[in-house]
Image (cartoon, rainbow, N blue to C red; front, side, top):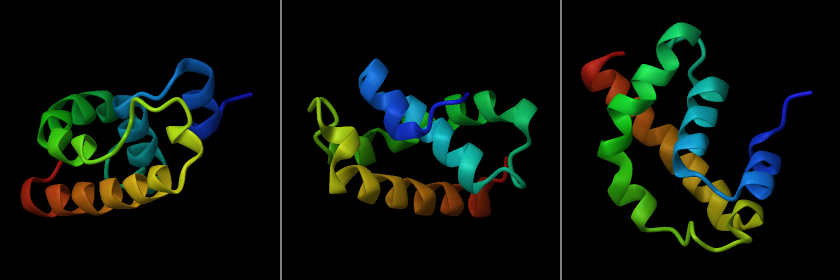
Amino acid sequence: RSLVGSEMCIRDSFSPYALLLEVVENEFSEEVQEQEREAFCREIFPHLKNLFAGYPTTDDTFALSPEHDLLYTELTGAIMLYLEAYGV
């Protein structure tokens, strides 16, 4: 069985990169093919550091907080804008 994002975050502590990969897999599976996802996430991750910095991601309960859901939504928007501007 595969873990959903919040379960993965609780078990392994929160990882901004893991959340980015989760958003790409869940929301952009048609735009970013499976074999391209890791490379895409490595490429875009440095551009998202300021976004992550605005959230208390080091808090042990972050994965269960409303802020986690908001960050997920903001990441979705940021990735959409990135794809529109630069493609995969």
